[in-house]
Length: 321
Ligand code: SF4
Image 1 (tube, rainbow, N blue to C red):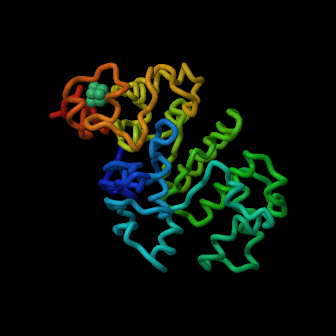
Image 2: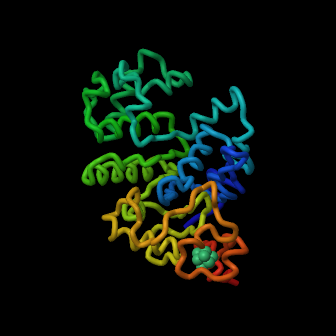
Image 3: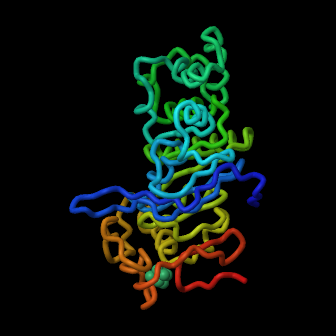
């Protein structure tokens, strides 16, 4: 299912530390290794504040890790500067939870969609109308919307505009940060259907951040579960019911407990998530794990392969031979 010839971007040992008060350090991402493939979606899930958005921001060069590499098209993008960095940005686009924040409210939809194309000299001003209409149709909106302003549109329509703007540059990878969570469930579904359709047409890799496992497992090819900045399980989206890490099992159970809303407290876990400033030595999940053993308090479990495309960081499991 995942072929190395289709590898678009690889994060290697990515760690991000932030200085905190009292000379302490907050580790938002710890030794994250993930691969993104052409035409495939990687869904990154976890509770709010687990570090998933921090990680995805590295992929679009909005921030740099403290350690590690992000290899895209043969180059480590964490080292790019100036014009090389600017050129790279057209290949990796981002769609935010609230697209309004990235739109200039005084610009018409035509100019919003065409702005990145104009910035990279891909089209002339005289072509803007035809180009905007083409991309509006691609995201299943009427061409006449080119003359509207963002405030004249619904949340779902604005998210379609954000997607049109992102695909206009024909990127290799689109990062979607909780891109549907502010929408009604029925609108969410239509946006996901649109994303899946465009991905098939254009063979784009997608990194989709979500706190909703129920939503993401319906279309992600790979799911990575994050806990306190650590990737604790990676498995094919179609096999999400085969997740075995105690934390992943809690998330699966929480689909029913929280009506699939992971921004709510997960009631199945008795204790609070530790502060990211106070991550315990050993397994980060030990304070909440019903299966915690002595070794879990001393040794941080490494991510190991336990099946085809299935990795886990937990002392309960042994590496597949
Ligand atoms: Fe639980 Fe230990 Fe596995 Fe961590 S390593 S999830 S504490 S069993």
